[in-house]
Length: 421
Ligand SMILES: Cc1cc2nc3c(=O)[nH]c(=O)nc-3n(C[C@H](O)[C@H](O)[C@H](O)COP(=O)(O)O)c2cc1C
Image (tube, rainbow, N blue to C red):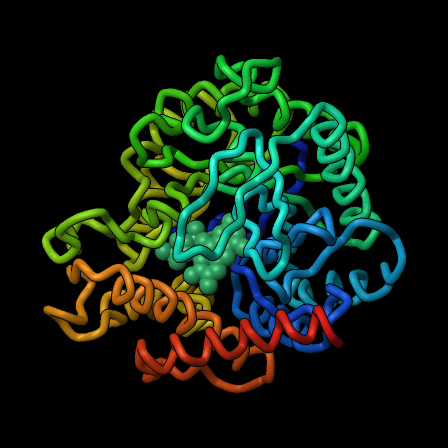
């Protein structure tokens, strides 16, 4: 029997995705010192294109050079060097898949090494090991500028020949900061009610649609919830999903969490071990309500690891697309195997990426150990991305502490290269 994952899907604007597997965005850190795409990035996306995933979404590409999520981000803010982006669009679609660019602005989640004066709806600082400076609350002209930057970048994405664009409204970055009543404490038309908090996103979507025309796919990545007291809730998400459907979004990707609450990669606040089994498809329980409200195709991302679960979710209509991220770092061609039903499940390296147990473990109360574990886990995947970008095979045996060291060293180098050339 053919896998339900192998059936194509037509989006509201008429575009057809060849199958039900989507690569969710993963920041690559592969831009050059001018924040431009490199041959390494092209190699990475050719490998992923050949791996059979129907929809590839790039790692977050920034709309403003002054504010990055990390050094090594690609920036697309004007049409200088568009040829490099054209090349990326071409190399990343060699197998006939879609390649969409995820556009993002980090807001307060912009490392101090990149900016000591980040922007945010209000001046609520992100407190993680002193890595983020206190943000400046945005004034009306900052907000209008951000809106027009997203629109310009989306237009450039289309001009460069990518097959779609995704606006990043999740994971605690700027647009998700606007949605959160905890972070957005404004009293004007951009804060307060959900309608006001979502206004910037809706203005961006309407503007992008006008700029790219009716045929070009627009996606949005949204949190099902921030999982923080007083943050963006599931009820909020259900309402925003309806608005996005009405505003002409073609694909809604659902994730969850922020830097402060890493549910996006399955880290729960307490008792990780006990919840490990439950963690497959972290956000699927919210899919039905969100899908019903949005009335547009929905991709759920986070924790999908076994083919049965993916196939059932699609066959039952719970999700339209299955989003995968980390598995594509260690097995870039896993989609082909899933589609051919020659693979039952994907390796969960994330479960092994904890420094021992007790003192070193994820349950350790030490913030330093927790930070080493978090950066080590993310560093493990960054390292696999670097290897793929060099045409090498993944190195799944890399230990957490080594991954942590590699990540810190690479991050320092990227920052220095960007600052001093
Ligand atoms: C190394 C790494 C980089 C990521 N970068 C991004 C990003 O740029 N944009 C984004 O929306 N999510 C990003 N994510 C989150 C993933 O898209 C995804 O939501 C998360 O990893 C859960 O999916 P998974 O369980 O299949 O890995 C990143 C995750 C990892 C591990």
